Image (cartoon, rainbow, N blue to C red; front, side):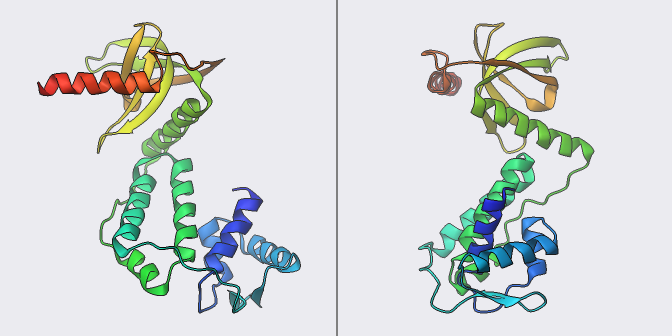
Length: 235
């Protein structure tokens, strides 16, 4: 996490609080050491942020420096919490950390009753990751990065029948189907849109080539093709 992002999160974690926030809790949330939290808070205080408190006691924003709470209903907030839990359980590590950081910012400026409601929601997505699941989460991160950067990928792939092939693809999107992910692509071998399941990808290499926006083979065209395919199945 960048230092600027960390300082931003510390300020938001302190906003709206009536009781001191322990440095140890901040360290655990941010994934840093206590020494880092002490140094960051001291730097914020020197820069004029009205933080009161000290190491071993906890920290508060000086009274009168708060900002109005976000206008979320209880149900809206619960949906955000549940969504964050699902991202943490099923997405890549980078997305999971970003979702948790976003939720921290939201909760930091909520009234106490809504913040408490957020912790009480009983819809869970338990996180259990052995090495294979950790590796899979890393693959989802790599695929997502390739989509964002328009990077051509070389995939070593095994289909449902066990047939293997090597494909160069232009990755367009990731979709989660409540148990399985699919990678939507333009496949250069088949000269058409193809979906690949990340759990069947044996190797994934970034070729170093970037692809551009081309009518008929971009995300909009892919979504239109998939819509037509599924509507045809229903008919």
